[in-house]
Image (cartoon, rainbow, N blue to C red; front, side, top):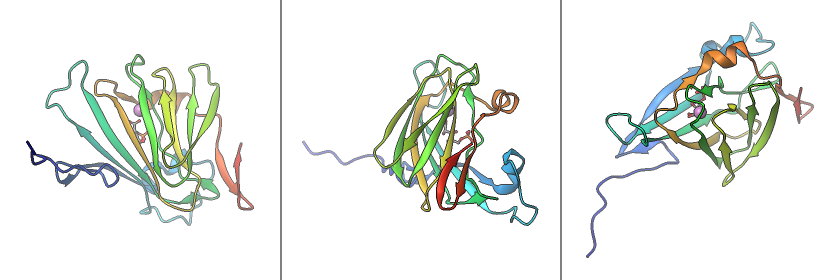
Length: 181
Ligand code: PA5
Ligand code: NI
């Protein structure tokens, strides 16, 4: 028996059940203060990144999964590469998978002692984020970076923790090279 598919999903473009599921769009003005040296001349309306998100269940319960897509534009702020706000999960028993779909970037990871490291993201790369690690994406390329994600819906995003314990690494473009400082 051949059955007709009920829903049209397109993970590359953030479409679920036939509709784009954009959850948020970060403009430079929303994240400007997180940069080391924001230049006064920067256009505050510049789109930095967009997050698409889909929860399959109507009600979040133990075992529900969420799916996401982050689309990061190839932007720099005074030489510093475009990065996501970064968070640790509210429930640190919840891990997450990230997977590269387009472009080049870094996944910055940081443990609760403040030790940080990076994994290279490129199309088809797969990354497991332990729930006890803060995570942030950086677009280090000159193309759009697209990263898919899947996590337990009850994980929660804790941004305050990262604000109190900032990542000790920043990523810059210097003379055409990627430099982590
Ligand atoms: O759930 C995730 O980890 C991702 O979907 C992120 O939310 C996304 O990459 C954007 O990052 P942030 O939420 O730190 O702004
Ligand atoms: Ni997360």
